[in-house]
Structure formats: structure tokens, C-alpha cells
Length: 81
Image: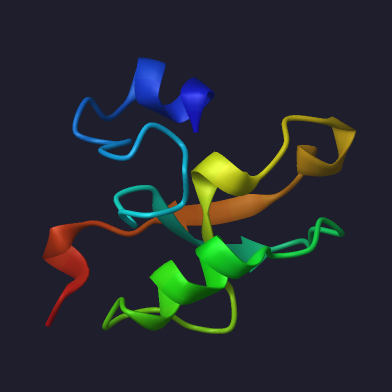
């Protein structure tokens, strides 16, 4: 989340990385993450209308080599149809 926040979006991270707000919602398009989704992240994603099985909160994804070649889409308010 920090990498994306600095480069692209200033409106992210209302909850400061606690997995409560959902403003850093992403959808993984290619690749996988081995990190398990914790309870707070699951609960927040359940409240989001456009969440899918590929949804994650960027603030809960560790920055490591696993991100190499991961393709994702940043979900914004414009994605609500």
C-alpha cells in the first residue's frame, strides 16, 4: 500500500493500514499470494459491494519477492456500477 500511496493515490489509507476502511481495495488479475487473509481484512472485504475472490486490501500485503510479476487492478469508486 505504501508504494502505491506514494506514487498514485493520495486518498488511500483512511484507516492507516489497519484493514478497516477498504480504501486500498485491489483485485489480483495475475499471480497469487501465499500470505493468508486475516479476520479484519476478510470482514472489510465482505462489506465491499465489488469484492471478489481475487480481492485483497493492499495494506495487508507484505512487500517481498512474491510481488514480482503480480498483476492487479486498483478498485476505485468509479468501479461501482
